[in-house]
Length: 147
Image 1 (tube, rainbow, N blue to C red):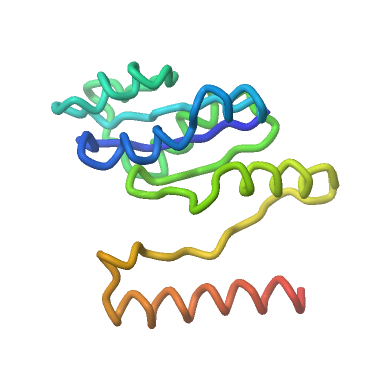
Image 2 (cartoon, rainbow, N blue to C red):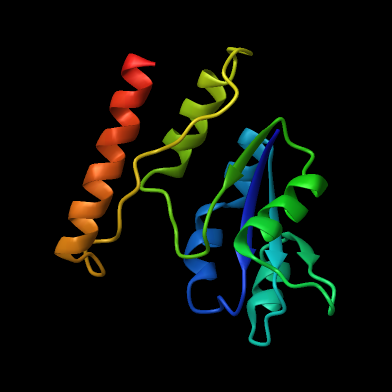
């Protein structure tokens, strides 16, 4: 089972694009649960999460939530063997290919973590993004090849 964990805080404008990719067919085929870890949204984020049948984990009123604590809180609730951490503004170019590849890769029980190439959509990308992400994507690639 895959657990897709998405921290949120007032993400009504971005969250639907990501959740629309996780169709009922895709969820069934790859046994995917989606967990929204919400930091106290006051917009329609929680209604959107419910519309797409996501498990919602909310912070308590007195808790300060960081992106890390939001991910950790959801991870404790996850039932999946593989945890996939996404941001609400993220998306997959080809979700079926992604989950198929991950399903195949994690057959190897010695594999305990993986990362992907990070890109920013062409409409939002700046030259600084290209430089920054290009550096880190290549760094992670080479570290994995020589490590």
